[in-house]
Length: 152
Image (cartoon, rainbow, N blue to C red; front, side, top):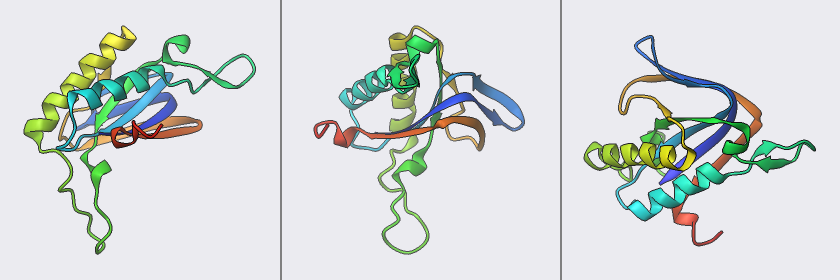
């Protein structure tokens, strides 16, 4: 499971011109799910997202977590995070989980993040042609991969 975590002052998702989710201060999270991912991976990643201290404190240091700034999450499914680009110029996506596995895990991630943050998670629509807008704050962008959890 991979996540691109972006600290934002605002972010939104529209599908067919309709807003499906929008937030102010918080995290835009792009989430990629692969076949090998487990519930353990999901719980580890959700905990990391909810606890990541990348918001500025009174000294301008990144010491505050999402809860400390009353931040929100916009969670977007993005299978392209598992693009294979080694050969040729057309990416392959064989590592990305198929919808029958990815949709339940995406829905489980929403529930887990809501449980950990105590707030509703804004979302896009799985598999839709989404338009994402954001104002990246900093910019702060963190890449997380559950395959690296034992190394850090």
